[in-house]
Length: 401
Image (tube, rainbow, N blue to C red; front, top):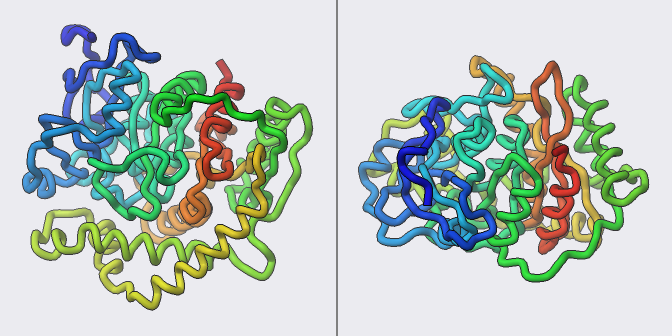
């Protein structure tokens, strides 16, 4: 049990609730004695879930039980000391919130942390908590892990129960987590996944050359060098460069399919509340919801055909024991002043690249990649659905500590 007198002060602006002991960790758990925070989409018994919006929080009821994912975190031994800030309804990748502020990014001072799991990433990177839970639909664990210089995990879709977690798009939503080390990421993952058997080793490393070429030119050389290091560490051999998107298809089309279904499901989840409540909400989030209301069933049917192509391509490309090196972000975290068309361009490129894992349900771990002027840029390792333990073992092997 963590004494209340030993709780840290939140000087990061990462929490919407806490620091306070919300749930005591299992003293016999693998991570006993560690502290953690949980994104404000997860139910915690005795608290309200606010989804980053004061009107949503006002309308919410006190949870009479914690989400199963939170129970697993506590079973691992982690004492939950707060609920962390999220972008409103988790419908953004920036990590900013007009109501509660922007959590600090201690790895890139003056830069945004990335979202929507911004508070969780900020808390871990800044030492407020040892580990944290987030969610990842279109990159909401992967992006802040990259920009905050920490380890992050998006598991196989459906591996961890999503009950008691506010949805954004259920076809893509996953429970993810953060840690400052690959060892801690794996230790927490073994409990979160209830993984009982040791994984087979990585047998080959592929580099998504077409996706990597979309990153900012200033970081491409560093990311390629890191991909070579990853392959050498995991397999003792050089990686193989591959083209993920076939020449007769396009990443823009793949992303269009992802986005249509994501918006359709977001409106199904929140449209009735948004229409009836008319909440105070960031203009960008509100605009995405309005756009979501215009998606038609015919568009969704077409999107699902596109998703089938993506699935078939990745199924053929990423074999058992194979890791595909992919970008997590296009470069380091931008400044908060980035706005307008340039901000939209950055967001769309990240969503397009990260949509591949969403469309296929593939697990992806983010590990430290390279730096640009001292600012971190993570790199992703994508595996076949079900290869979560393999990726977590890889993260532990790649831990610079």
